[in-house]
Length: 432
Ligand code: ADP
Image (tube, rainbow, N blue to C red):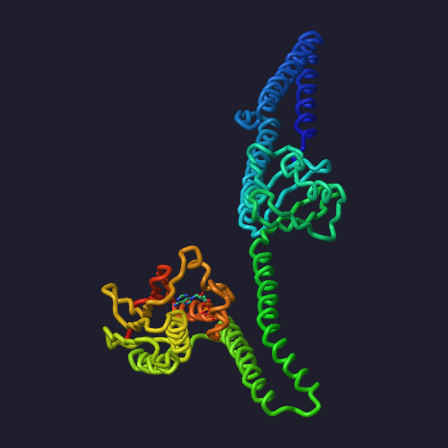
């Protein structure tokens, strides 16, 4: 540590010694004058340095630290060192703050910091987009002036930190947010928002799906159950009656079997652990098989044609491709009245993409239905679909299989004239 006393005492001692010496040789007056001059000069020296220090302290950030001599040189030197350290630490803190800002900006959740009276202190960009805030404009504003939904105002007032609030339509009509309050630093709060629109959508789809499956199964089960009860109630079972009932029961159980089969296929396709089996698929040979199956289904009522414009093969899963192609061929036959035409085609486009397509001259589909056809259980005409043994899941299966092969399903149709369903595969799946 710098010793202030020692130089001051040495100065006083030397000044006194000189004065005493002068007193002895020249008398008291000259000695007193020299003593006074030396003290004044020292006093002025300190005053000058104090003024310099005061001047610097008025604006230490932009003014340079004064240079001093004697003890002041040491003091200013120490101050200089302290300032350098302080600036370094401030830069470090600023960098840490910047990092924190970047980290909170990258958070997958919106965060708003509120003071004890619920005024916004700070918010990250995601919170701005969730709640429609603007950090440049809204800092310092009461949050309830900006997020006005009554359920939110109530939630904030209740200070319920245990359960999240489901907030709908905060900024956009269809946005669903999960909001949670977290207490920190005494009476401050963090409002954490999470966009759960997608989860809500999935949950709605799940509910719809269960409702649809139950509905699909209820009709055939009711029919079969009705027959079983009737037959049980007959004391002497009439052979004729039983012969008439059994085919109808068989038809309904077959319908349930198809439905359950399609449901299992869909769940297998959706299983993330079920990776696509990649093999070399001889599509022309497969389509020849599809044509034969189609002919059996059509029972000679349609004109079925197969056009193999290329002999190329495909890298993919044979079982899945057979199911997708078969579904489209079956649909073409089911939705084409007697005497109509169905053309199955396999070709290689100029851009190298292999395309499977089925064109029919059937009932066609009105434009507004086309975007929804691949939704599960979506049907344009439910009775026709059921009459022809449809489950409403065929195109959903085709879409899944296409996606698994990075292919896409294209549908073009004109009501009353016919439809074309095409699966366009990526060029990389083509094998010569
Ligand atoms: P479904 O078992 O009802 O046929 P899909 O998922 O295979 O179920 O098809 C969904 C709906 O798309 C059908 O109900 C039908 O209305 C329509 N559709 C499918 N293929 C054709 C087609 N080739 N011609 C006309 N409509 C079709």
